Amino acid sequence: MFHPTKIIAIGLNYHDHAKELNMQIPDYPLIFLKPPTTVIENGETIIYPPQTKELNYEGELGIVIKERVHNIGIEDARQYIAGYTCANDVTARDLQRIDGQWTRAKSFDTFCPLGPTVVSDVDPMNMEITTRVNGIVKQHSNTKNMIFNVFELVAFVSSIMTLLPGDIISTGTPPGVGPLHVGDEVEIEIQGIGVLKNKVGV
Image 1 (tube, rainbow, N blue to C red):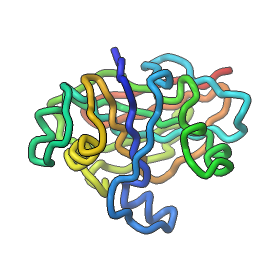
Image 2 (cartoon, rainbow, N blue to C red):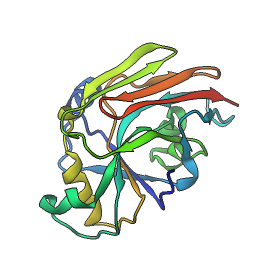
Image 3 (cartoon, rainbow, N blue to C red):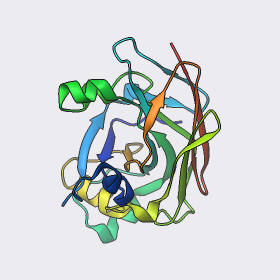
């Protein structure tokens, strides 16, 4: 279902997450890229790579781009969005700290579960988002707590790079990120979309 040419992910995009980390609110979206080889779908296995000892979940709302777009304004962003999905920005947290930049930590195969479907008839400004590990709630917030909303993000990213049909913008994670272990089942649930469910394996 998902065949992006790129995944553009947003760092530190929830007010409550910034507060949790005692970090200043950014003046503009902080972006990084995940390669398309990170993508897996609902029910597929997240592989715990041997290079890390600290695998983390990050439940996020994903924006799916509808058509080629470059350098648009916020007021025009809606028409270029095909819909929304659940995303999990899986991260090797220890490698992120070691490297000081995020490419290696975010780019292993299977590190971007997406699904279970793409939904267009929802209000992206007010959606409950919940992450559960083995049935226990680990993250819970609402997209209304985003620092930069979905339309601002599409406009901002399009001012930097051309977005192509199927590309994904992963809009940042709320507070409560934490560890995953082999055998865990992680669920990302977003109101109006459904539940993205993946197990962790080797």
